[in-house]
Image 1 (cartoon, rainbow, N blue to C red):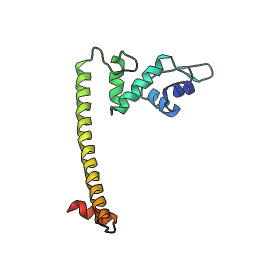
Image 2: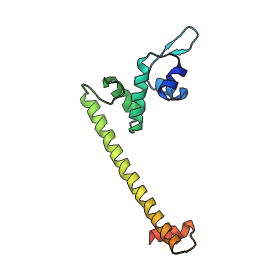
Image 3: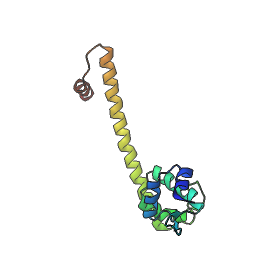
Image 4: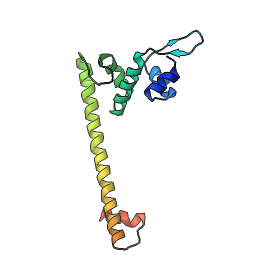
Length: 137
């Protein structure tokens, strides 16, 4: 199938598909006129790649894990090597740290919004700097 069809079927831009190919995540054959021709199996592979990217895995990790994945449209790894397990554990730990960071930011924003709403309820004119002072206090 041509790149436009693959893009349509996976909801992925052509540019991103070319990037996946450049990164060695998917492959294509070239037709006589130079157009990329993708196998039907690329549909499931692109969906898997997008799921792994959405989970926060970088393409370098996906390139290592993808050959071990045997179930289309699901993230299941069969017979992983110790290196793959270690790589995934490192990525999981990195994601956990990122989640903690995001939670701290979410909590700070929530506190800021509480201070703004309290100030608004009291009828005080609210500027960004006065709300920040309320959060700091």
